[in-house]
Amino acid sequence: MYFTDRGIEELEKRRGEEDVTLAWVAERLREFVDLNPEFETPIERYATWLARLDDEDD
Image (cartoon, rainbow, N blue to C red; front, side, top):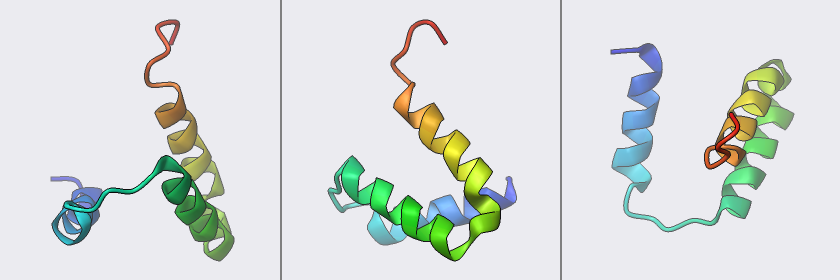
């Protein structure tokens, strides 16, 4: 198990039944980067990866 799996599991346990929009997720990511600017690059990469999941060219 990766260390990050613990956070993902907690997220799923606490909020797994909620319905949220991608706009809500995007705003939470912006807030996180504002509070933790050292994570700007990984969050940018993650957001770009999510945005392009359906691109057949990638």
